Length: 477
Image (tube, rainbow, N blue to C red):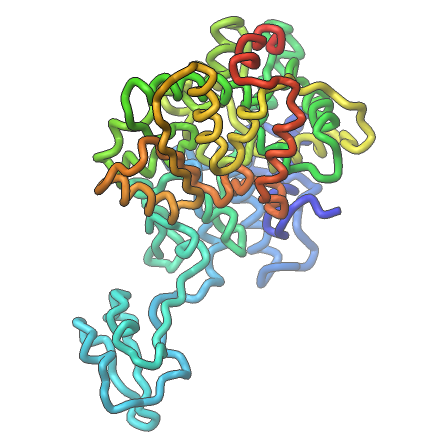
C-alpha cells in the first residue's frame, strides 16, 4: 500500500528518513552537508538531465532536512536548482485565435504588448512588455488568450509567489501566510518546508540519556485519517518506541479551547477563530480591520502544551500534525514557552521507518481520550459545532450564528463579507480544503471526508466537553 499521494512526497520522505537514521545513530552532524550513502543518486540520472544535478538537488534537500537557511525568515524555501522545468507562464495566445479583424485584444492592451502575425494574422504577445494584467483575455470573444500559471502560483491564494530574474519561484515573505499549499502542489518538489526533525531527535536522545524530563507527543486529531495500513493504537505504540514518554491528543486542548471560546464569544458578541495559524495570519495581513476580533485563545496545540508545562515544568512537548504553519506558530512569543518543536505526519513516518519500526506488527497503545467535540476540530465546521455544544453546557442564552469556511478562497470570501456586514457572530476559518484533514503534510489526501473524523470522534468515551476537561488530570500524567 502506498504511504503517500505523490512521488514528490516519497522523495522528500526518503531524504528525511535517512537523515533521521543517521542522526539517531550519531553518524551525521547538523552542520554536515555530506550526502548519506543510502540516498546518493546514481550512477545514472532517473529524474533530471544529469547525475550532477540530481546530487546537487539532494544536497539542497538535506540542508532543508537539517533546518534550512537560517537567514530566510520563512519555514518554506525554494530549491532554485530544482525550479527550472516550468514554463514561464502568464498570458498566451492559443490556437483558438481566429486572426479576426476586430483586434479587441490589442485595443484593450495598455502597454502595446500585442502585435499580429503578418501571415496568419494571429495575435502575438510580447512577453518583455506584457504585465499580465489580463485585459486582452477579457476582451477576446473567442477566449483565445489564456493565463497559464505555474502550479505554485496557482496554489498561492495570496499572490506571494512570483518569478525571480532566473525564472525560479520567489516567495515574498511579507505576503506569505505559511499555508504550505505550494509545497504540496509543486510537481518537482522545488518548494519545501524546513524540517526540525533533528531538534526532536535531540530532545528524545537527551531525555533517554539524562532522564531529566518526560517528552510529550501532542498528536493532531487529523491523525485519524492517516496511516491507513495500521491502526491508530499501533501508531501510538510506534511513537512511544521512538522515545516519547506520553502520547496525547491535541483534541484535549480543543476541548479546553471550545469551552473558553464559547465564554469569550458570549462576552464580546463577535469573534473569529484562532485555531488555524494560517487563518490568523490571513486576517492580520489582509483583513486588519478584523484583527481585533480574533479570539484571544491559543490554538489547541498550544493550549494543551501550556497545561502540560504548567503542571510539569520540566516536560518537553512536540506537536505532530499535517501543518506547515504550525512550525511558524511556535515562534510566536505567546506559544514559544509551551511547544518545543513541531514535526509533520510525513516526518513522523520518516522517523518511524528510520528506526525500522514495523507499524503493522505492533500492539495497540492507548491514546488519551478527548471528547467527540474536541476530535472533530480536524474538519471544517468542527470548531463551530464544539462552540455550540459548549454554550449549551454552560447554559448560555447567547444565540450563536456561526459560519465556517475551508480553503483560502472560501476564507477570503467569508472575511470580505464579514468586513462589510456582520451577519454572523462567529467565523471559523481553516486554510486547508476540508480542514486539517487536507493539510499539506498529510501522508495522503485520499481520506479527506469529514465522516472519517466524525467516526473517530464517536469512538470517544467522553460524552461532554465539560466531562473531558474535568478528567484531564487523569489522562495527562
